[in-house]
Length: 233
Length: 121
Image (tube, rainbow over all chains, first blue to last red; front, side, top):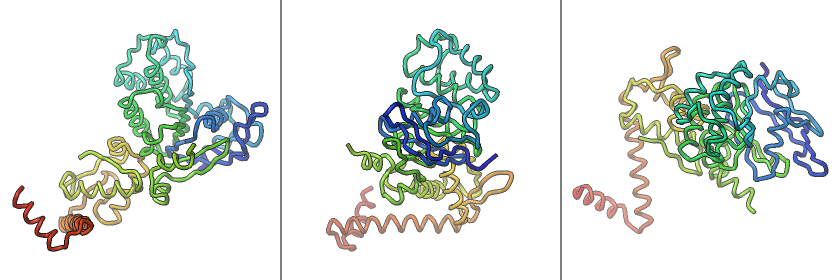
């Protein structure tokens, strides 16, 4: 197992003339919780989709465990998309079984336990759940894998503050020295205390990638305040 | 005591301070076993690596010590905890004097005020 979990070299992605990522160099280690922070349209989701192999790079490369995204990397990457992607007619318990079939590292017991803490019934069909509850179900499924890399695209945007706390605690309890969690969000103050590192991204460029406490120390302000200053409209 | 953090200072520094306060106040008495990093990090809602760093600092200062198999413990050196208590109280006293001075009080007036307040409460 290499020290470097995810590596981007000169990674670029264009949609027609629109540049989504412009030559990103990035290296993520293991055992970290990292915030991918940027305004709307900065390239957060594009980067995450490239890491998943849902998009292919226009330029440069992205590697996970030294490999191009494919079946081998997907087995160790747990991805939470920013949109609902599960068939809405399915019941929660069927989704748990489906994930159990799909992923060798999935723990159905863990999922069931988390769902019961969040008081979500396995008998419910997805389409009868509220937006926030649907998001909770997706997050439970993503976090119930023993993956090496969790890519969580806006995991806390639609859920209430109490559930947000529960989700962050779940991420912390699930922490392992081998696994890294990359969380994209603009709700920085909520997740700031759980982060090791922050990445600021703007117009497809990485503006900074630093330890959170380093930012607080040298800038004398929280990452949230610093973000508001850097991205002031 | 719950955990609260303010904005502009490193979390690691704030964790060190709050853990010290827990040791001095007796919430973590001498010789007591401290919860494992992961558990305490989840309770405080902070990053485990940041908490680990705070633990290392407290170990360096001799307030905590790690036993290889059984966990991490508060020092049994009561005089060290006593010294820390004095240190923290001195810091509070300095802050008080500093702030009353900004209000235009002399040190004598500040001392007199404290004496009167302590008799009233």
